[in-house]
Length: 237
Length: 237
Image (cartoon, rainbow over all chains, first blue to last red; front, top):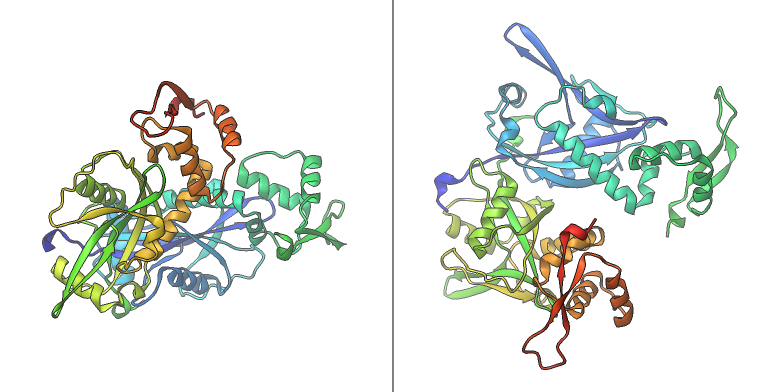
């Protein structure tokens, strides 16, 4: 290998942050505004950052999420790295990188992480000038996204579906601390792209020792208040 | 983010190449010789390379394997990226990098791939000065390895075990084109860390339409020649 053929790409981490509002699966995206000559171009991007000097990949993901949400102890899972030179082929993305990073960047290899957040946890955006919002996953396909972030979201979704099949405890990272069986079923069905029969689902849950019925019902709901449940990790195994 | 805190790591791809010799799971390692003052230090490393300019990650892995084995169409699966700054903390590794790469390298983020090879395929090492050999996976723990390659092999093994559970077709990437049920059972048991009952295993295989009995038996074996089978991918689904 000769030195000339070597290239120094930047390395970044991008986070696909999933949330569940009780009805729909959501993803956290950041507003991106780019001033192009006279026009203002707007699209959305995943939370991400170039890794810092002496920063491990996991640590970069933790930092990004903490800066963005103020939260710690978020479930994180590295799922895939994206390194196509085509990632930065759009002059708009290059322009944006140069303006925000104050650096000439030609190529970025990014390491994708999935994060799961309880959507009712208070999110406190610590970074300046960032408008961060939850978007319906179904809407995302119709949304303009930076770089290859659409592909990253898609791969992240496949990854978390795969993981959920193996680690049922992960469902409870997305649900509020106290939840109804109806919420659990909706989340389960959304993730596995199925439509469970209500009665069968209740039977199934009754066989899960880690889903524990509370002596409480929902409050302030227009329909008949349903019983609340909690997840007991100690009973998972 | 200020420009000074940014760091330019190199990006590489490392391949954990698994093979199965009919009895044991093997991994392909390259001999590494480092001259330190008067002594020659010797250890082993995974096949890998810095990614080239305009080269995608998958393409780098394909190139590395082709240079190493002369083979194309090898099963490859990206599984994890390793980016700890500690990866290059050993002065010996730094020295080796500088000598072989003719470059000052302080940090490398590496993307791990698993490859599966039929061990009876003729391997034709195309690179100069590389001695490549198959090593018993059990021996590897007792072997001196470069960088964090022991951790990469371990994670690669976990990945392929996980995949095999979902994609039984992958077993046949490791077996010769014609194999015995005994070979399939040994591979299955090694991978899943179980000990199958011979009769039950035969019954199980009889229910797999994609494992097709041939009108042939083993040749030149000291024991009673067993029937040969082949894998029919078209019958997998």
